[in-house]
Image (cartoon, rainbow, N blue to C red; front, side):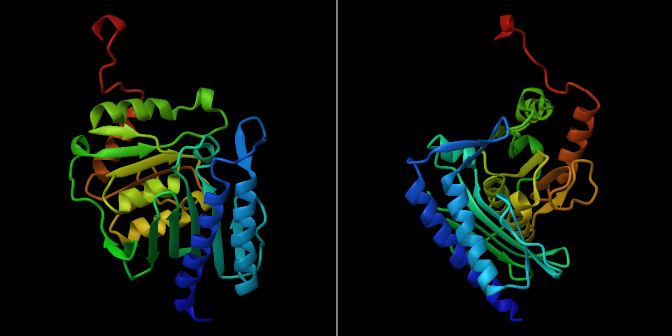
Length: 272
């Protein structure tokens, strides 16, 4: 099998899926998976397009896709597909969403493609060949302190009323140049890769959320671990991805926050 085909083909599919999403954008009907998770006709149409073409081109490969149309083969190659990362934004007509396609070989990330159709920004990476935004080489930022950095995180739709990440978000936002919540983990990872953000963390992400973005971040010089500094495997537990320079400082902050320390002062109403 010619590995050189993987990135061009995934890129072609992602562009077509992004164009399809734009056809649905601002004309979408919303459904719910369970109590909170949104799904739209656009999610399903995009996944049908991506998965259908991957199956046709690589019938022996496994595919893991968010809406469940993938296939489980006995293959060293596994594709991870998020046909619409940022569905909540999409459903509310907020133009921050993406198509994410990652490929792993024996558990190693070898290809990542993330397409933001609303800005026509195309992030790609192939192991050992660097990371690119619209064919321009990208690198993580050179900011070396958390205090000077900009960070992003996300919050799950389920159990959002008791999500403990709000404590991390509050403290990190107060101790750094700022915290942001954009609503697309794939784009957050790409924005770390191209230097717009110094780091991103989140709990409970799925493999299809991060496989492509992590491949891109790694090729741009970034670093990823779990939030305690251990190895991170796609779709497991909690994750921290940074430019590398602020990583150890961020892990130390996470450790203090997890112990319940209130590092940043919370002002009273009277102080505001």
